[in-house]
Length: 370
Ligand SMILES: Cc1ncc(COP(=O)(O)O)c(C=O)c1O
Image 1 (spheres, rainbow, N blue to C red):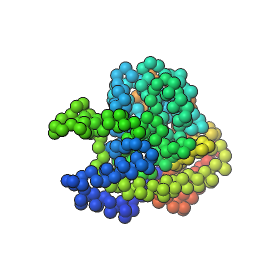
Image 2 (tube, helix red, strand yellow):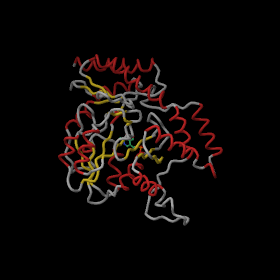
Image 3 (cartoon, rainbow, N blue to C red):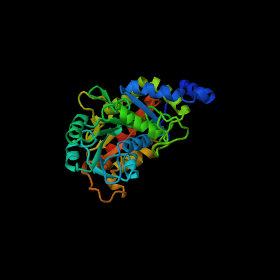
Image 4 (cartoon, protein in one colour):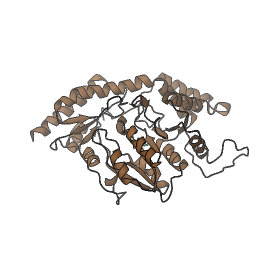
């Protein structure tokens, strides 16, 4: 593809940090970048604790495990989601319960959450899809009413703010992804964050193959844990990226704003919503066609033929064939049928973005004629 849908921004700073970790980050220095990345990330987010992991999926797996989620428990999440959000629930033997998303956030609908709460409900996961923000106040209210923790899957929401608070810092815990497509990357990687000291201690033990940090005996686990550690070399990349946070996020936001300026006037299209008082980190610019004639599949294929790597909106988990007992969700299904992710990355230049806009506009007008 001439224009990929995502790619990281790697400068000399990232290369220098990684070279330093590779050359010197061993022995006494084996955790130097890891400690720094965790400390700077927790400060950046305004939370008490952060644990760097090999993936966001691993961070979520450990967080749910630390909450005691297991067989006979239910966890509520949005039907519009990447499969990574549901996989840890299944691995723990619990039952995922899908609910539809709101049309104006593309995130979990709090009203529907209330309808599916049972005595077995152990957690509610709010995924901030494509950097859009779930209605956290409403979800926290419901969580409080029923005594159920609300968790944030902020894999896609670095840079997003909900009423002044950074996404991922609002629920009982939050998880982030640093996959290569993300605004801040460590190649693969993730982060678990919380301000709950007890939960942090439990996840820390789980993250260290079940070894309590106060255990004096060598190789002595107290529980069966996990191995989802980030490497010091990856953390070096993360430290460099985090120091460039403002410019990395600002560029994504500029890209989204330019797309909106050019594409929304075509009519019959909506793009990533932003609620009053909230800020979208703009990870993934996404268009939703309101007209049925604007077949998303055809537009995707025409854009790919022009060398532009676009992606479909996440398929609802209930439609994947993996969760046959789940009800289907009409808003999630409609977003999948009508949604396309557009390329966005730090080095996307004006000409490239112009090309994306031109090809998309032409394709939309062609569809409109038929
Ligand atoms: C919403 C959501 N949750 C979880 C993940 C999992 O992240 P990772 O690939 O780092 O495990 C992703 C990945 O992109 C995601 O989009």
